[in-house]
Amino acid sequence: MKPLIRSIQSEVIKLISTRLLAICLLSALLLSVGATSLLAATVAQQVNYCNASDCSNGPIPVILPMVTMGFLGDGTLGVGLTALMILSAMVLLVEYSHSTIQMTFIATPRRSTVLIGKAVVGFAITAVSAAVCLVTSALAFRLVAGEAARDLEIFGQPAWSLYVTGALTAGVAAVFALGIAALFRNVAAAIAIVVLWPSVVELMLPQLFGERAADAAVFLPFLNARNFMGLDAGVDFHWSPAGSGLYFLVFAVVIFVAGVLMSRRADNY
Image (tube, rainbow, N blue to C red):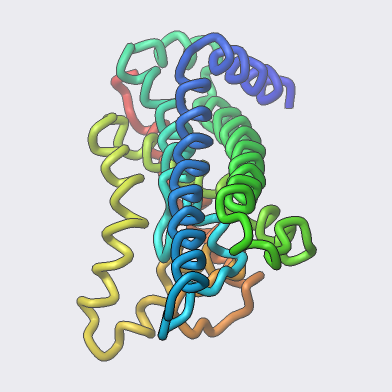
């Protein structure tokens, strides 16, 4: 247990002593709030137009998931969560790219301990950052949308449930990103997978199964993550949102364990 605690302390010191943490966290916050604010401005403009003139279709109905658009996106991961996943992957990739991972493994020969320490720190920082991004985005949406969001409960029980499940999902996604980084140990390859898997691959895979697309989609991890958060994933799942959350967690842990095994087999570092 003591080696793990020392590894966690070491990872915290590494993160706070570099600009990477501040850059990624600030990017996640600004991108989340910025994208959500743009959506809120569009909604407000449409409501004002419909109030001033004949609007046959009516304004866009304001619903709670809108406040997460910048962070969680619509059907795929949003830019905010993507930035935090990149941070988690870069925690390991930076050490490989600068060859400082050698000293880390010398200080802590058990490589699984090093990666678990990084996973614990990544999960904690990402989950807390996600909660901040989600609440801040909700406040920004209410402020920018104005009258259009007067009936939106951003601090009601459904909203807090979304914030908490969103934070947990982000933490698990960080573990997934770290596992991908450990598997490939290459900045370009790992970042490409982290970015494209949820936003491109999961959109394309169901299309390849034709009539069985719906059956295949229920096994896609990030769609299960959306179901866990109570967001519409466009799929009829065979299990509850809690089951989807467990499925996403197991998927991330499997990827992470594969990364740990790969790091233990690698002899270059």
